[in-house]
Length: 377
Image 1 (cartoon, one colour):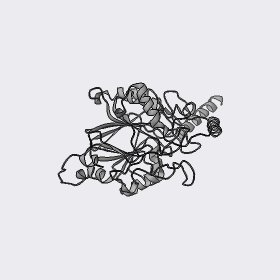
Image 2 (spheres, rainbow, N blue to C red):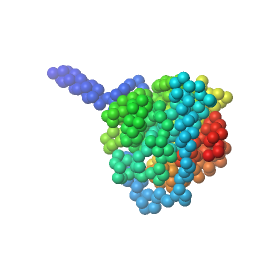
Image 3 (cartoon, rainbow, N blue to C red):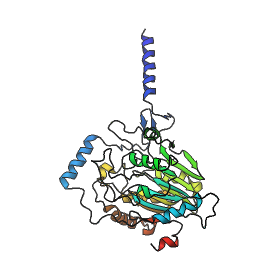
C-alpha cells in the first residue's frame, strides 16, 4: 500500500508539473523552468515588494525624480519621405527610381520605425497616452509619439521584446492589426502569442532565444538579454523576453528592448560572427539608455548610459542610437539626464559622438546616407 501511495503521489506530482508547465517548455534549455523562464546569469531582476517600497519611500523623501532642465527634443517627422522610401517596392511591376534606403526613426521610448529591405518594421509599439493597464493612471507621455499611428507607412513587421506595459501596449497592437487588415506580422517571445490572440491579433509568430524567422529575405533572430516579464501581480517570468538581431541585405541591426548589462551582448556578437564585416557586426544598434536610477534597484534590469556604451562595444556595432528615455517618467533620474550621462560615458570609454548618438523624437537617421530631400528638411 505504501508503494502504491508513493506511485500515486509521484503521478500526481507529474500531472501537476505538466499542468503548470508553460507552453513550449523545454527542460534541456537552461532559461526554461516548468513555471516560465529565468535569467541564466543568476541575476535576481524582479525585486521583492519590500524593495519597491524602499525605493519609492527614498524617492519621496529625497524629492525624486527632479524636473527636467529642458523638454525632450522634438522635430517634425519626414512622414512623406519615409512613406515614399518604401512605396516603390509596393507597386507591382513598377520600376523603382532608386532602391529604398535603410532608416531608423525614433517615435518615442522604445518605439522605432526601421526601414530595411523595403520593409517597414516597428519595435515595441506604444502609442497610448499612458504606459499602464488603465487609461487614467500610470506613467504619462511627456511628448506625443513622433509619428502618430495613423500616419505611419504600412507596417510589415512588429517586433516585441517583452510584455511590460511600456513595451507591449494592447491598444496599439490592436490598432496596428486592424489598420493592416491582419497583414502585419507580429514577432514575439514565447508565451506572448496567446495574449495577442485574445486581442484578435492572429498573425503572430513566437520564438525562443536563438530562434530565427525569415520574412521576405530578412532574418529576425530573438536573442537573450537579462530582464523579466509580467503584466500582473501573479505572472512574473511566465512569458519570455529578449532582444532582436536583424539581418537584411541593406542593414544589419540590433534592438535591445529592456536589458540589464550582461554577458549576452558579447555572446550575441560571437554567435553571429559570420555576419560581421571588417570587424563590425551591426550597422546600427538601438540601445536603451534610460530608466536606470536608483542603481541598487534597476541595475539588473535596465542599463545606464555607461552600461549601454559597453554593450555597444560588446556587440560590435558601427553606430548606436540611444532610446528608452525622455518619454515616460519611470525612475529617479530626470527625463533629460540620459543624454547628458551618455556624453560623459562616451568620453570615458573613448567612443565618438557620431558612433553613439541620440535623436529628437520624430528624428530619423539614415545609416546609408541621407537622401537629398531629407537633408533639406
